Length: 105
Image 1 (cartoon, rainbow, N blue to C red):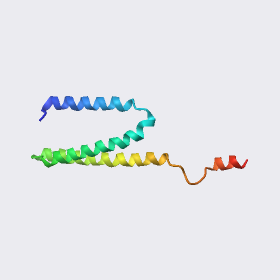
Image 2: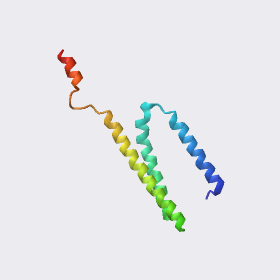
Image 3: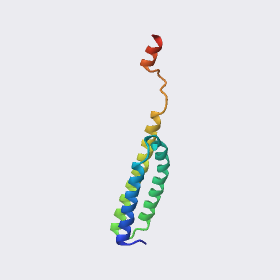
Image 4: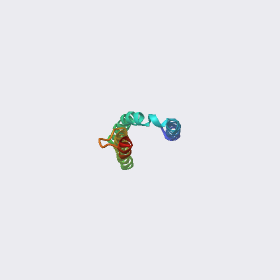
């Protein structure tokens, strides 16, 4: 198991790396990447449930429970955001008023 400062160092390095990678993604790729990242959120949720399952002290159980809540919220939120983004790309069944007015002129 990773102890103390090594765990904090890895956590901070992963956070910084993730931020730098996501900040450089073009806007057009966000929807496909969100769909793929939802898979990763599911893996994080499974890891949090495993950590909660092997927790022995009350402090570990509280931290594990919070991790499960945050991971579940992150996974569900990712699917909600992806669904909303995909709705923007669907064509509306009702014709646009400006388009129909322009066609009638």
